[in-house]
Amino acid sequence: MYAVIQTGGKQYRVAVGDRLKVETLGAEPGDNIELDKVLMISDDGDVQVGTPTLDGKTVSAEVVDNGRGEKIKVFKMKRRQGYRRTQGHRQNYTEIEITSIAGKGAAAKSEKKQKTEAVEPESAAEDHVGDDLTQINGIGPVIAEKLHALGYTTIAQIAELDEAAVAEIEEQLSFKGRIEREEWIEQANQLVANEEV
Picture (cartoon, one colour):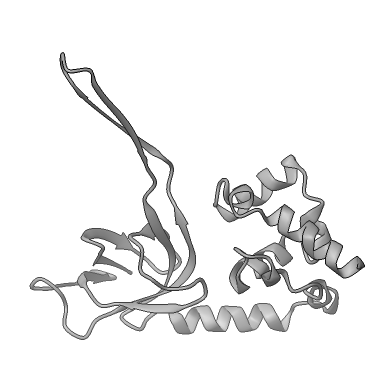
């Protein structure tokens, strides 16, 4: 099952579980949103096409992250006038994960999550115990949970990150340059220093 949706003036073909970066939606990581501009839905050969949108049909998604894309350089010039201008632009985006299409998909995902939680060993649950990483500006509840899954559960661990660890985290979480830009390590060192005092 898949759908064609419109958001931010662009159209996307999506299925449950897909992740995509769209124009900024003004929502925080972890928020659930409804995309109501559904142009088409295909369900095992049953195709519904809107005119231009389908009434009463929505696509549900969870906000994964907000970020900025790679820098684009814009160069302007005027011949024989000595006019040269170089500008840079980084487009803001919201990364979302599709959870259901027209109400289908969310239930299956919920059941899968319950099964996973049921078989999770006690040791794995204990791994989630650690510092509140959201004390660091730039780390929200969703990012903190992902860091826990990667084995980073304390502020001291963030303070001791080296270049290789930073590169690994940024690759796993798909936000290149964010750790340095938001100064996670500097913030973590300050928090550790405050605790020692």
